Length: 329
Image (cartoon, rainbow, N blue to C red; front, side, top):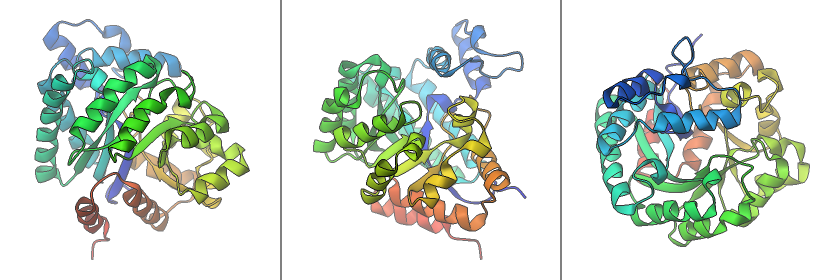
């Protein structure tokens, strides 16, 4: 069976990373930008490993140059995501790719994304919220303008602050200033950790950055004391199995620790991360969890309830989405 029709909540996506390759090729052609080297013979994104993936990702982003580009991107992404049953989606979006971190420019880009999100919700029944994101490998100073953008535009659409990028750039404490800015403004936060950095990176992220969610977090499986801390503090993991498999953060689907994490008592959710890069969809993630671990509709229903409870949205939105998750009568 296919799990396409199950209503889903997805917490960990990167808006630019969700861009279909054909969409990026089209923008490149419109703007006479030669990025042919980022595609493989089949038209997909081509990368060797995680560091090369970051380079290809940033090259693709060079085609996204205006608020209108981001409006079109947002609509294209939501059309694809909604087709796989997603009714609520949170996405990381960086001011660095939306006007170079300038607050006034960010507001223009944001308005365009909100316009597309509103249209998609009316037409497709999918709600999108944004997590303003600092890019870790750009350095701690570069994350401060991103945090300022989050603080200045926190509200209906902007619901969180996060950090993505190269996990091994610095240590979590180096980035505490931007997370402190967000927390003082009442903004919930998440941070990528434990995809590559192991248990120590997750532990430091929780203790120094004050996050309530961790992006990936799979390295926690190697530290029982850390698992206990995650469980006690009710930290939610945004797990992206397909991404982990393609990037070789794990040895394969059967080696993925998501089941061990869940069975240990950790709150886990499932997302696609950057789906066209990793040749995945939410339907494919569910299918593989079913084939590999025997997960069924009850498992997915419980996981979506966990995800919705952890979502960075307001309570009215949470109640509205909860109705979409109810089984069809």
